[in-house]
Length: 332
Image 1 (cartoon, rainbow, N blue to C red):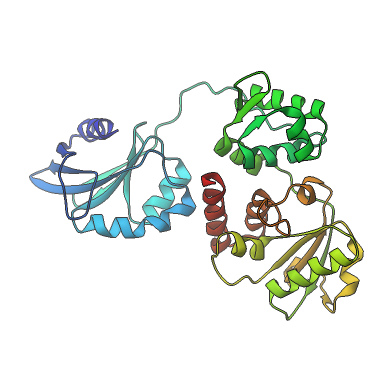
Image 2: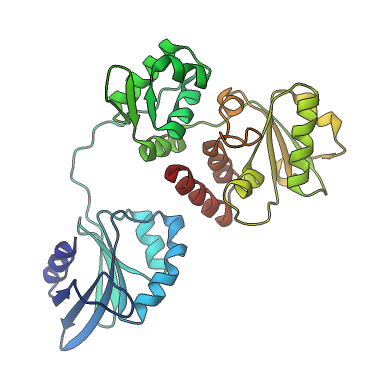
């Protein structure tokens, strides 16, 4: 990757020398000394095997500050998208990728360009959305490997023929590969990203309320009431995110349930809509929301649903929490 960066500098008339074995106080992966019009600028280079997501750039601040003690912080990755590029620039990084895209800013040096993609892209295949599809996909993201379709179907709560149909569709989309007669391995990061891209939402019926009680307490009371009524209920949104990857004090309550009558058991003020509410009680149309749960705590929704709800509710803090849960889920 560093050679592509040197070629980029050469193409705009900037001479440079690269030292990739230099041990600096900033622990840079490499040092690039550039010269233009008798002016010398040193770049302290951070090499990434993949570009960070936009929400991850804030976590790179300590490394950026360490590199700044050695030179201009320059992040290099295989491909940096427009959104990630904007986020890196806002976070005061110079950056470049192996495709020729760059935004390099230093004293006397300014390189800013985006190379249009000339590759012919295959039409994107969407995820299968028929009966049981989301249960299968959520389970695949958790398990990673299917060894025996019948046993997997039982865990996902769907039929074995439906598992075969969905796996065949995912194979055609390049999201799973077959490793044996009844063994399939999922590309978990790509499958998760596809779900976050294609999922249309839990839909169903939503009731909104306002409560003065802490969201954690409200969630626990709702789940306990559901158990007494023999109804299903799972916690998502802020409270589930805090229990999975602690991030901040939750301000919003999101609970999915199979029984809309649950709300009558609580002294909560009905709200006109989401703008006036801090509690949402949802009876989902998508059965996978209640069927496929967090395997370590069945009172919590599956982590994919928690991410989706954080993104839906919005806000910088929630998007950062969603990125944290994504990393946690894929690292399991």
